[in-house]
Length: 352
Image 1 (cartoon, rainbow, N blue to C red):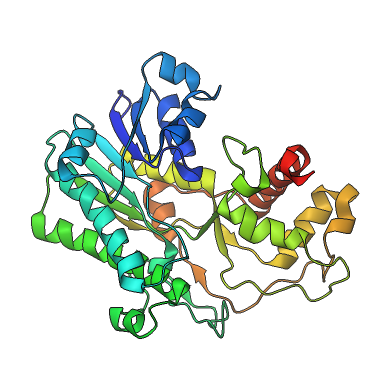
Image 2: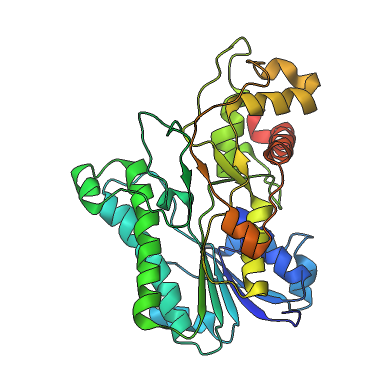
């Protein structure tokens, strides 16, 4: 599909949404993005990367609340677009009631988009971002050690609503349940309503890599930088046994954005896993010492070259076959993200 099409990208201001939006614009498409606040929109539209597209009317934005706005508001937002790439999703780990604070908002967010799309004849394809949290059965005791199990698109995690009701304040368990039930609700909608558009979901693991629009403070860094890179930089340099990670599966943000657009370009429906490979803190240390030797005192050396064995992984055979998915090496993603963290750290006046 080489002709210009009109896209709605929800969460276009976000870490992933920025890359998806730019990829579409560079391919000649017209993008209507959504964000929750005017401040979020301002940061994107005034940035040199995006301002030329705003000036030539290729990029526009509107604020919308994924859960709070009316059906009519959503139908209006979707009006006249050819496709929807739905990145926006409630994400937090501070809820106190698993079903009310996690599962119900995630389910309703997906259904709001699908109902609005079903009311607009122009929509030909809806592409939604889920998470590998919806398919991996997380074992808090064994962590990544699941005898080398390989998950594929047929898998869903084993968390049930009954599990959440028994342990309503367990944020991680509730998050995994929300991803599973939100995706199941979406596919049930497709099966029951048989809408006129194609539907595709992606289930990436932890998304890593550099920001398209570099943040000005460490506090504003992407989640992966704050949960993976920064903690490692804070380890005592004398540590030999580096901490084991609970989820070793990662993927580069640039590759996830590309996969979403490729689904549109190739007209592919269904569920796809997009993963880049495995990481652990030893790989992170090896990358750090290879590319940033002048800062070696900030990171333990550990046991160079050793890797986790027998950990679970995610199969990308389907995405490689149908979307020609070719993720970049995890080492490259980590290198680029470390470089960004170090640059932001140097310029962050709040750290002085």
